[in-house]
Image 1: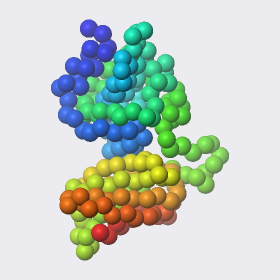
Image 2: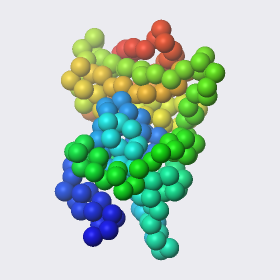
Image 3: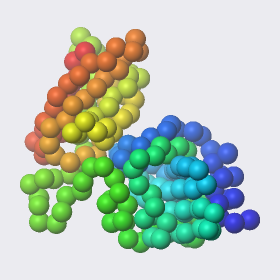
Length: 203
């Protein structure tokens, strides 16, 4: 059995977590420190990404010409397609990564829509912002919160019992969209930096 067959068998027996863009998926995985397996299929091409404790650690790319692994595969994993994300036990991901480890993660970072800070440019900064959705100061559980930068969604998640979601993003100004259980969408604007890491979204 080759690596692709192993991956497909693992996906079939795993819990489906959602379908995301590459940036959304990486942000979600990082904030929740997830161990998961992602796959996107486009024509005859298939793209697999193994995430361990929130970090992309393994990659596989398959097309009619054959398979590429690790650094050679991750070059092909980019924005512009939707990735199905499934929850997988860390020990399984750890074993998978042995055959397709990513050593040069810079290739992946170049392919996502938001930029990462360059060395020496500390003023831009990168951190985790926590948003709390409330109605009459009561935390709202199970509402969808998305965060946008320059019109592009860089994170999307559902609030916890405390009404919270967290995203790992660059410092700057963002638009937040909150969709409540009645499908009503409310817009907010926030500024995120090292002194403003928590924001309340009052519906």
